[in-house]
Length: 55
Image 1 (tube, rainbow, N blue to C red):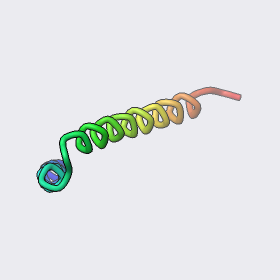
Image 2 (cartoon, rainbow, N blue to C red):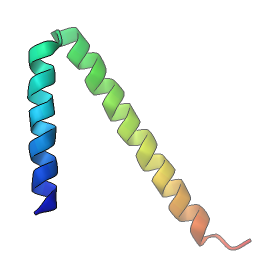
Image 3 (cartoon, rainbow, N blue to C red):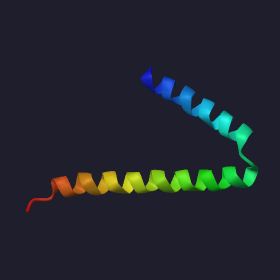
Image 4 (cartoon, rainbow, N blue to C red):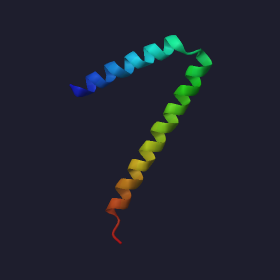
């Protein structure tokens, strides 16, 4: 159930940001966060694959 807490926190943050930022700012933040997520996923995949390779 720990993931439910994370979803609650993320939902709360999204609502607060939605109240504070203009639509254009939200669009930019959303795109930047997606990019960050994709970069982190790429790093994790590369780390996993590098760990499997033998020297």
